[in-house]
Amino acid sequence: MLALGSPTSVRTSTTCGAMLRELEQIWNDIGESEAEKDRMLMELERECLEVYRRKVNEAGNTKARLHQSVMAKEAELAALMAALGELGFHSQTHMEKRSTSLKEQLASVTPLVEDLRSKKEERLKQFADIRAQIEKISGEISGYNHHTNTMIGCLTLEEQDLSLRNLNECQTHLRTLQKEKSERLNKVLEYVNEVHTLCGVLGLDFGQTVSDVHPSLHGTSLEQSTNISNSTLEGLEHAILKLKTERKARILKLKNIGASLLELWNLMDTPKEDKSDFLRITSFLGTSELEVTEPGGLSTEMIEQASAEVERLSKLKAGRMKELVMKKRSELEEICRIAHIEPDTSTAAEKSNALIDSGMTFLFMQ
Image: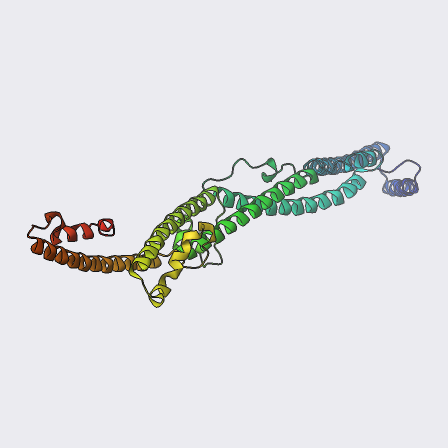
């Protein structure tokens, strides 16, 4: 609308006055009556009013649209500020609104909205990245047995708290999970190394042993990460306990075998060269289970070989004992024959051999 007294208003009034005078002159030349002139002037005035009214309506609609746009931008700005925690803009935009036109307000608020939109998109990417990492690590810790629905609220991204405070809380939560993952991974590696050592000493298949706990512990796929769940840790603990129990049983068995070997060697006056292959067995007599670290030192093959040697020496001893008994029996029978007495039937060869075969050799060593 033109302000009264403005240069544009003065020019418009001057132009309209000149045109009206020109129109009156034309009417006079035509010879229009005063009544006809008045009618046409009223018609002209009505048409002018309609033009003004149309322009006023158009201007009003434009103002309403501008006002609606400003309100929508301000509402979006408020929502973005609330989501991002950027509340410092509010007082600034509120003061500017009081002293500026609608176009100026729209021009002022639009860059702020666009800036906060970009900031929101970037913040959403940050939250999404953190969420993906948290879900991955939580799944690794839980063993992917269930979805983690109890996560902190920072993971519900759509139109929620995207403030730096909440982002920092999410990052803190992620760092806590990363620390727990690192500790679990170190524990798994510690257990796996212990299983490897025990399997080596016992001569067992390490790969099969850890694969029975979880395939990822001996997997060759680069895409398969090491499982660090509670069930895996418990499985490794159980495997280690089982291996230690087996180690204890085997070393006890080898100690018994070693004692038997020493006894048989001493009894049989076994030459040094025949002992050389089994001296390792007798060394276990003064050894604790923790001191046995040699690969295959407690293998079933070693136990079987040592047991076979004990059995061989025992049979050899029994054969010699039988020969000795037969010799003594013959001497006894000769003495009894000369003395004309019957020999004791309890020392008959059959009974003596039976006692020797049963292991009761001490009767003949007195």
